[in-house]
Length: 501
Ligand code: BG6
Image 1 (cartoon, rainbow, N blue to C red):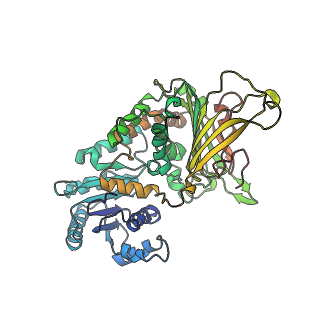
Image 2: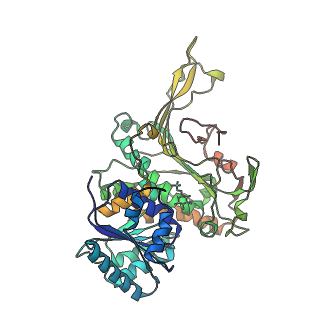
């Protein structure tokens, strides 16, 4: 395994939640798996006054307890207070970086991780550039930017313009942690390394595609942020559309950042815009209401701290759309995402067309169930194929059975968390699993008319759904005929309206 060059990772917003819950644990994992060079450092910065020692103590709480390597790792962690708006603080940061570089024998390779509120996404890069910290003459200078990348199409465009004033596109790593998930990456391998799937992956054989990302949690103390975002901005514009890109793209010429991102971009350019008059038919929004789960009262969304008591923010969205290109003409795509649903699950369902003729008996003479390939992103990561088999005994009764692979059966393999993979890739200069500026804009371009219609037309309903259910009943109506969404359970092979919780 190639090891990145010596470097310093500078985390802006280091006193925040993401740093302690995700970033530090991810870098720690890279460290214990010997994926980092001998000489590296992490410099946390934020407005909070902390010493190196205090910061280390805070971070220690989020490392696995009792690990001998924790203190070796924490010795590489430093802290510096910063006022993000003061240019002189960036000069001080530069001096601190110089001194760490000298004492620790590190080259001038800096990865700046912006884990701050989004209103600082243009301020910090600009001030870094004024301090010449964008200059790559003596080593790489890269920016990692967390979502949300803009709050609408025009702010995303402005942010791209502002960043590109001082940085090349290949210095900017827009993180979408879904692309860092092992199972999302495996989509490319499933499609392009299997002769049995590749020929049928198109409109001739596929009836429909369904992508669900359900969460059982609610807004968990993030009401203030979420109420200005909603499920469409929080999950669909980025994570779900990136997954659509991976499912629908053409084979890239090579497995390289731009080759793959060109193909994703082509998918986004082919998304059929949803006309204003079709929005209420093709896009269903919902918001969870109070309910009782296992005898416990669950608050409705409007009662969550930080949420407007009259909020019209959607905590659920389900939509149907088409990709107007050669491969997918006429195949409906259904995606849905929501909070306070019955279980946490993200999966892709590829439903194949039925056989042309109904040959065998079936109970009640209904159609056989369609073949489905289910790619489980999380949890119980794996792949499930549902196909029909003769019921043993007299006659030709058809029944559906499962063939499944679970990643958990690979016991000796460490499944890296998304942030581990993405931070490592950015240190290697590999942007394959990061969103490119133009694709982010294309994704906004697709959803902006929906957001505008929701904002400007109060007659478009927002349906309530009791916390702990599969969203508004109306979302079932998106799928024609007697078909429904797959209602997945915690375990990949189980499904149905009711699962063990
Ligand atoms: C984040 C959203 O980007 O993704 C959260 O802001 C959401 O609201 C989270 O809970 C889901 O990520 P995961 O990896 O748990 O599916």
